[in-house]
Length: 593
Figure 1: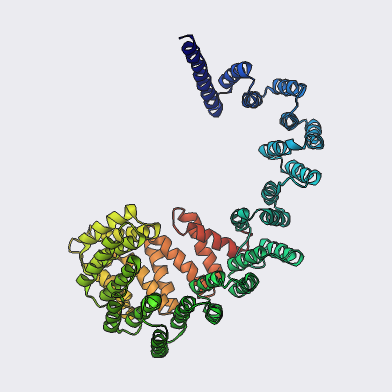
Figure 2 (figure 1 turned 60 degrees about the vertical axis):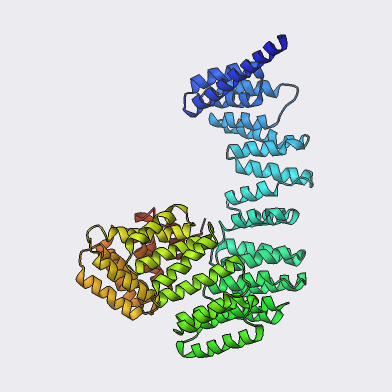
């Protein structure tokens, strides 16, 4: 019984202490320092805990009781076991009183103490960092590493050098850190990205490239090639990135072409087809097996489609057929067949042939996800052919067969889009309402945009006449009938003046003119949207597209900068805000932080 009462007594004391601790912290955070001081004084007297001591000093400093804070610190420094970080605390207490010489004297004592007490280097450095005394923290870590080379403060130093703006030393410290522990590579790259831009002449790019090349010369290691490749990718210099990946491939000698393939994918995505083709040709030539070779050919055909004129399309069809004759039409060439049949339907208008091919492919022993992809492409082609009900059946099958996956979410969005194309706006909204809550970010954004389009253009017009006409124009755009789609949109602008659909029509026209490479007409559409609908939801889209048009197609960087700047100052909630800020700073010639 006595032991139970004792346990209960100890528990009660611990509970009261915990409550007082929480209350003291709350008072301190709320700026009620007198109340915090009273509680911390009691807590420290009872426990002599170091955290309460620190809180007691900090609270006195907030109350400008510097002499009391000094007394407490000196009392600790006179105790048998001295923690030299207290010299930093005492120095900072003098600095608060503008007694700079005394502050410097105590900082120096702290730094010098690591000569005899090197294990305290970390706590001394961290205390300097706490008070933003970066130079002193750097000296502490550097001295500790000189005194004991086994100690590794490269991570702390790299971060501090970055904060000081000493990029050269920052890069070198991170490279030293990665050399010792490869696990830090991802952290280093994230930090490098704060100082590296697309511009090769940017200071950060130059210094990192120099540091890596120096390391490669002194102590060759594929890690440095990997980081150089990463740097060249940031600069969109895929040819140089390819050179580094080739060096890695040859040195490793393990038939692994993944790094080279990744460069090819990125180059294709960035529309650098010239270098992408060189890289893909290399993959095909060095492919260790048919699977890699087929993947290479698939990417090569994608490049050919993007870089060829419509007159050359029959040659591309023959090349596809030749490849399938060589490698077969089974499961191994599944991706190649998907891209081929998409090409047949959307570029050569051979929809029936594509549908027949895909139905044959679906009879192969495909995985669940492969079969779902085949059905998705089949449904897309049926939408292209305006066979909406058949398409909806396939999309619904995909949803059921791969439930809860991104493919299923995409299928649901396509059910909504197909319903919208056929004028069934109510069912489209039902699907979109689900997607807005549960889909991946990209699909959720698309769902939100389509949902707003339907909602905004159904309120004032119960017949939904303009919306139906717009959906028809949207379908024509999907069918790559850009000229007809533009005419339909012009009809909307003429017959539905002052209605909400106008800004949607102008934005769509701008996009279609860009596809047709009629850039001045695209510019006119975006400018008109900005002029008349600058307060509406699509205004930021128009600003961003116009800025990008000026930057990449019309060669007018000053105008691009102007519209990127407007997004920064007038559309802070825009999804384009971060990219616009980055582009604006780059065009202005800033160092990107």
